[in-house]
Length: 132
Image 1 (cartoon, helix red, strand yellow):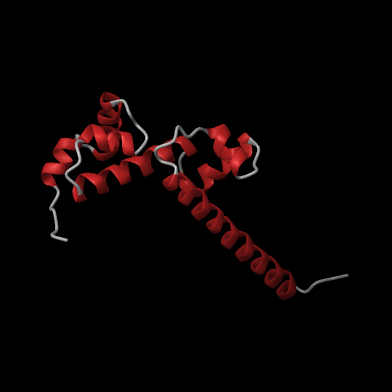
Image 2: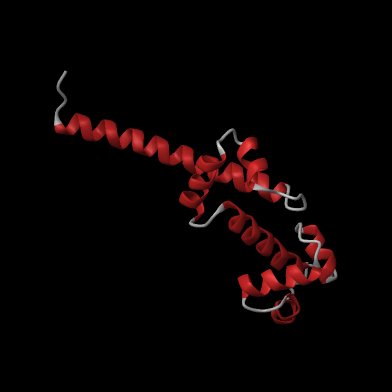
């Protein structure tokens, strides 16, 4: 069977859109799972098993979705959530570190500074607290 260029292009584009939408859904599902389990000790094997992927496939997908490896993405989400806590609460920094799954205060400060270009204390001091 021969397809015209238009038929082939239409078929390809419809499937490409389907794949794109499903990849976006998967990325959102992964993000939601990570955010719900930030406090847990997440690792590549656990995440790849949860989403029924071989470890290598899962790592490749995460780089495609997020532009970084999955554990770097987990760290980014943890720091994002920590920023939220620092801005919106008066919790101690060590409490926030535990809430986002980084119970080692020194390590938390180190990776926070690497991601945010300031310490958690500096971030909090520069945050504007809005009244609830």
